[in-house]
Image (tube, rainbow, N blue to C red):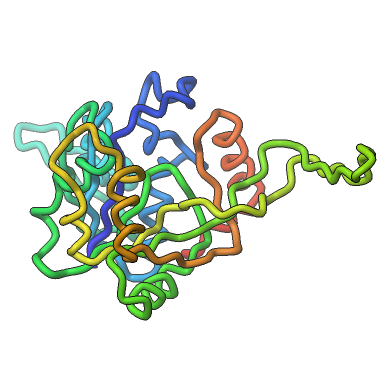
Length: 261
């Protein structure tokens, strides 16, 4: 089953970083957040990736084109017959990565539609965003999808709390104040989706259509949208503060999404 990752947005709320690089390339612990997402999927055996590129996509192309240079020690022969020798292996040698240009300003529905040609007819696929880390049990999400028998299963997650939580009594008194609770009670779409090939039928070839608007509305209307509830860790990287938080978790050795060895 192939994994489509949306990597083309401009990340305007993270302008401190995305002025210089695409958001999936913003580092967490010295590696792009995109690498962490791919490592999560690879841990569960899904190593065939299709990356939907857009804004500053050349940086993502260069990163994977030069992956050996970025991950291995190397010896260069500088004589008349130059040679390159890479000394060590890396755990990603069995990955297959397709880098697809899906337009500088395209919206998410069009980006997915644009890579339909890389998904064999009739085969399901996995789909997520290039800016969110989680402990989602991907095989369990797939099992939920098969059990539901619907076109699309999204992972329903609790957003990380961004504001202090208050419990206000009828008389206006405040008896509980929680500084930025770990999770809010509501569910949101956390990505990490499982899709039948029929998903492409819901995606118009229109670069101005967002996956999260008309296509999702149509899936709901047709009773074809399923939710896999995830109660554990999920953290997007929409702001500079969230990027710092993810780096702090990694540097402290408390990154819950690191399920690989």
